Image (cartoon, rainbow, N blue to C red; front, side, top):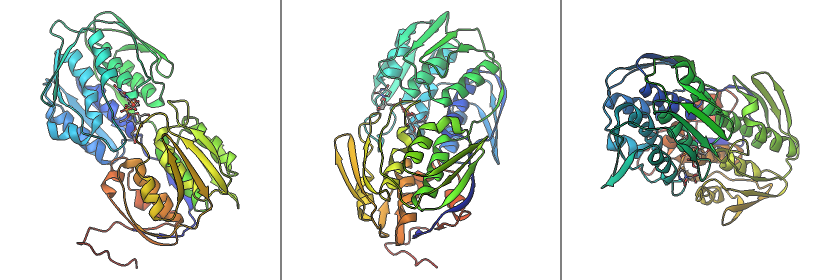
Length: 422
Ligand code: EPZ
């Protein structure tokens, strides 16, 4: 439950990146021994991935923000219910195929942000000698004689496919080149971890990644990089509520496109090491943007930008080019009074509009974050159902927001009624 309007003011500390932590956990499946990860975010997707690793035979101890993963003998069958609940589970295919020569994963569950095929993952693994068949809703991949290196060009710079193939290649025979690779910073985090385990991999963060297969890998320790999407979400929280504040323990160079758009909207934005200060202008200016693979504007901040656009003067135009159905949350924003119009992959937002609290439903993680931002700017009480989606990728959102002045509380569903905000 969110009471608005409020003016956020203060400092928010950024947690470890969900989309790095999940991949470092998977990379451990390639090695042997005890791994330790620091700065691991306490989010439910990390808990789910820990269960996936344990179901494969690894041991996981997760205390505070520190995780220990013990890897010995493994098997390659992932539990159906876990893969359905989190698409990132398919990341285990590459490592297990390379290590065991076989892996069986359920097809990932339908996702609220459009169709998300795996063709790029499978094409790359097949080029490395895997035979992959679908029986029922399970993908069975085998490489009885091991994987061999290949020169692979991705048809689209898929983040997950880049990581899956890169990890598989570390134990393949010979050299693998991945062209048109995704360049997201989380992939660079994975590369450093693999190198620390003894892998010969280079080029992450550029469109060409080269891997020389080795016989086996050891273990390593690492600190998860800060979450650039969490940082962007809270910066937009200060902006949309006409406030000012600082995010700390961030890596500003990972979200430069957002800082540029916020400056174009008239905000004051100062970067100082791992801190970013933002102050909203009296009049927020409208803007235009197109989401793109890194280093372009990140699709994972698109919903939050639309929420901010409701308070900007004029018409803002956003185009989504990464996912084919990532506007589901617009119907919810309209319940708050937002004036938004979608045409295909484009949305136009007219502002500023005085939003009014409403009963809302979060469909996915970033949509949920966008609804919270809009509710903070809205007049009156908003109830956002589906908060469990938000918990997948945001650590303790309500306490981080309360600490900077938000009036936000988590309540249990009580039949149809909702308790009054007091
Ligand atoms: C990762 O998903 C992130 N998730 C997503 O963040 C992020 O939005 C996405 O990358 C893009 O940056 C994790 O890292 C766990 P893709 P991923 O493969 O790897 C299509 C969040 O909120 N595609 O780069 O699944 C796909 O349908 C999440 O933290 C194929 O067509 O993204 C999509 O349209 C949401 N075939 C586009 O490519 C394939 O084989 C980008 O997908 C693979 C992908």
